[in-house]
Length: 149
Image 1 (cartoon, helix red, strand yellow):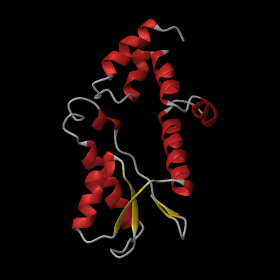
Image 2 (cartoon, one colour):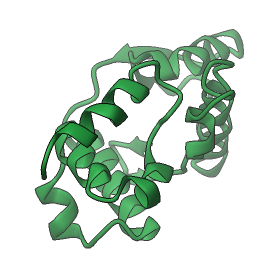
Image 3 (cartoon, rainbow, N blue to C red):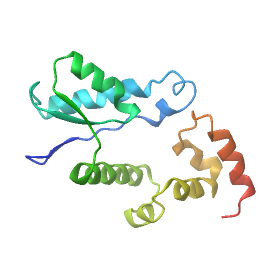
């Protein structure tokens, strides 16, 4: 999260465990997002009358609703510019921290298919980085066995 006018920033991570079975089907990631956002609001001392531009994506739906119910000024928004760059850079930093590679390598494979190809190159050790709760994961996992990378 970023306060655009002052450039104050906060980031947190939602554990990959929220995106694996059985947590994924129980949507525990929504609670994980809630915890991260609440910590960020506290750290940045956000006031209730300060407009909060929150991405319209499903993963943030619960937090948008909760903040509105708490009296915050929520503006559902498409995230672009400085905030989008910050989110992408934080994601890359998290992948580096997990040991996936250096910034250059990660930026080079920075797409769904790029990461999927990387996982399939050593699926037995790299599957831990995958959101395996998706219904499509088993199909994608099997498809990797039929492709040479």
